[in-house]
Image 1 (cartoon, one colour):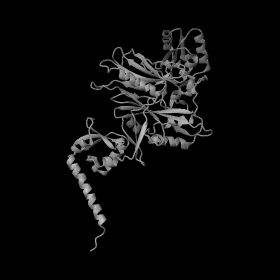
Image 2 (cartoon, rainbow, N blue to C red; image 1 turned 90 degrees about the vertical axis):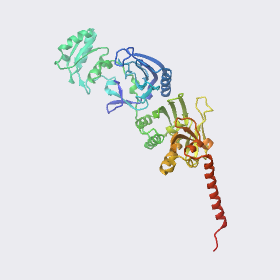
Image 3 (tube, rainbow, N blue to C red; image 1 turned 90 degrees about the horizontal axis):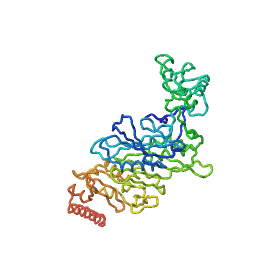
Image 4 (cartoon, rainbow, N blue to C red; image 1 turned 30 degrees about the vertical axis):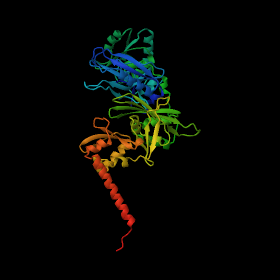
Length: 494
């Protein structure tokens, strides 16, 4: 994809956070009338427009839900972000022009006949720092005649202005690198005339460029910075250049939030975005992330707020917001607000809670958390409730699960259940899935095909019947009783 905005920077590049200047997120449907991707003739339809990142993704997911899987032809969906003060424009191949916005995510139909799920992939993260492709001088209002690609002199500028005033608005020039002079340019009233005159420019092996002179200053920038002609005359919104990241902040605060993101499962991919946002001095900002859990796509938003206390450089993360597109079922959305211990909730914890599972919130107190789906607030969120005293080792430990026979595998199993995972286990030769259910001091059990099952069925699979189970428990009780009686007798005297 050719785009003015890329994940690269440098001392002479303009770097900014796109999320600061995004006007809207647009869901666009892309089709080809001739049913072939490489054909010309792209049809683009704006399906919906949204104010924020999560709503944009929700609009994309809704569009996919309502769109049948195409049997023939090419259909794709895109989520684009548009900049403030610009109108979204497209390249010849249907991609958004980099001066007006950028590509956030794409969605393609399945490539196998038996699949029924659109594939969604993130392209660019709006919260991450972007660098404009060309040097800062290209976007500056100050006119200059030299740059990294080529230099021209004032005589060329005067010639371009004179020919433009005379109606010769098409220009041909020699694109050789280095310094150009007036003999490297030719002008005409139309494109054909400029192309005809370009034959006499330079050597036979030189490359000729023919452009329309819609803007002399932008044409100068196009020459000296080697910009493709189609982008010469697109105005760059001044808002892109107003982001200054000069304020200082405590490195300890920055390191704290870096560690916090790692602790909750975001890794280090947002470090640059975090550093620039915190140093920008903005009172509020957001960071974004996407995760894939199995075949479920999770879109995460981390809202941050700066302390309003004078002289403070503290920044606080206000929980997290999750949007989940499951393989099966309805799209889900939930906000997790930081309260007591809630700052320790990981992305995986939050996702598992949204799948009606429980996770260990506080290891010291054996406090578990889960969402109460029977209640919903005005924002559509379910309250997070807790229960104390549930010990997964006491509940799952006595069960005839194969992995529990190995101490190391047993600890891995307990840790997975504490994170809220649905864990695959085997009892004898039979497979099951189990989840922690602390509210009722037990486990949820499913068959290998995820049909509801029970602990009794799991025991039967291991060859333990109700009578043998009772006998085992009675044997344990009798043994404990005998040991108690022996202790009560006291030491024997011989």
